[in-house]
Image (cartoon, rainbow, N blue to C red; front, side, top):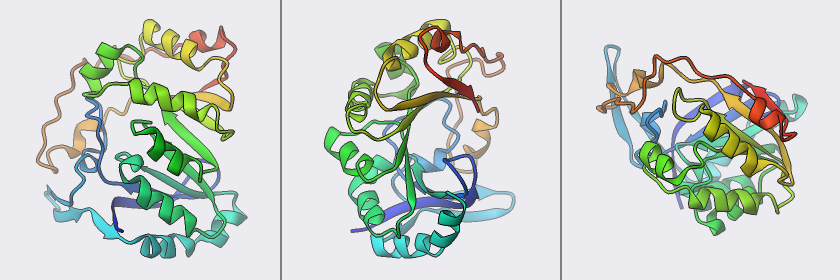
Length: 250
């Protein structure tokens, strides 16, 4: 068994508690208009070209090779209440590989950062081995979700309900995209969806990344957002506060 990784970022402090290493798995079923990691979409290695030259993104590992690399910092993670975060792309596209790597880690805290778009079996295979889950919710309306991500959100909402029964703490994360995910209607729908779910620690509202399109040309892709990215993002947590859902801005 092998898996493909497009980046490994050490000493990350924004992908979970403490000092962490974040492993970015290659391949994603979603096609979000605002994606800021276009090199994570394809499940195959690809060449990025820039004025500084060319580099190949996408390296294959066996579970033991990747675990051996990550375990070198296990003592640092434990001393700083940190650990490993698996992100992407979408790590559940390589669920068996990620689960195998986690089994080989040396007693470190593990976070799964996922869109939730997967079969229930793949979702449970990985989530059950993690200490914390970061769960992305973008849009509740089915038609809008299809329009802006290219995918149905039924598997995402189903796996969220599954997660709420697994006794694993989780954080729902909402990327604030101007005029798309930050609307009162969408935030109210997300608030209603997550209100009262067991295991929910809080909802994180993530700022819009205005540099999202910067890597597309290097990857030979075109950045064509279906929204006005110059529009100010609406920052209003009231929909969550009214339902007693803890919320924070990152």
